[in-house]
Image (cartoon, rainbow, N blue to C red; front, side):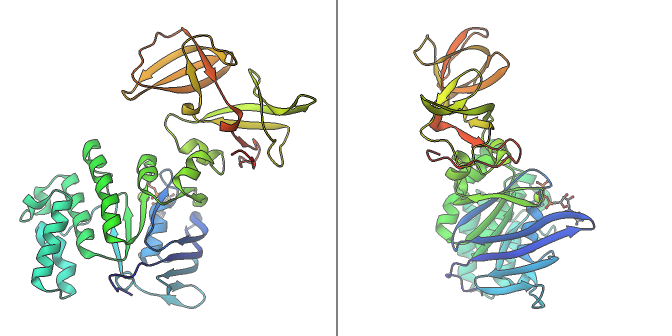
Length: 373
Ligand SMILES: Nc1ncnc2c1ncn2[C@@H]1O[C@H](COP(=O)(O)OP(=O)(O)OP(=O)(O)O)[C@@H](O)[C@H]1O
Ligand SMILES: [Mg+2]
């Protein structure tokens, strides 16, 4: 391993880890395509950092196998356990560990010097990396002379300079302020396109996950809930956990029942009966229907085929306005484009189309297969 220009696959087979009686990571099978950017997304404590540490070799699994670039680096049964420094990976962790007694420059170049790269090449990489994180003016400072966010950027620079073929990053942007975070997000993506390294990126920030990833792995309680493209995760969540975890404002969940009679078939949401081209396979009697707020069309005037609702709260965010509405007992969130000031209590007309709905089994939470979904 370590050939700087070969992209590498990351493969996990039945990898698991418990701390005492607590299962941090349930047996996981995961294949990450060479050169892709994969995000591990989930709430605090769901096992994201543990999973990354297992791949890095900083934590020993209780079972399973890990292969990096086709090389077995861990196998419980095969008795293989290659130490982290021999796995050919670049790491950056939640707590950005810089050496406190070394300047920015030395922190970034240390590993390069150990690799015995020519001095000119080291200088090139240093300048390039520091520039990318906008820290080129700080090369002679010590970590204690930098803010938390600046230290984190140095850690990112060190990673850039290493040119590893596999990058593992644990919330590398978490200490940055909102603006810098957005800039760095774009940089991360650009960086990935340039370096062509297989990247496993941990975050609990869904925007980061949706914007950066080729694929997202959504985890909850140590279990992978879905591993798919951002589009798939957003539009066809595998279960109610994923549906609710992704999307801000949250997806609307509505209790419904499927109907089927001489007129055709569809779903009855109580306040409206919507026709469907086809009922999902395994359609139970009761169903949870989910619709994203932006899929709900908003009209300010009475409109044919739309529902009249009462506006409870309008929240303009600038580029769009979030509308919290109510119809009887049911709350419905909608989004309308633009900054639209509106008075609470006024009527609105909402249009929902059957084909924009996802259906879930209310018992198991799993998505029901749906032809138009
Ligand atoms: N060294 C440890 N000893 C005991 N329990 C641990 C240890 N490390 C993690 N855990 C537990 O394992 C579970 C998963 O932790 P992990 O750090 O992987 O979560 P995470 O998804 O990274 O969360 P966060 O988003 O807060 O960083 C948690 O319940 C945590 O308390
Ligand atoms: Mg963590």
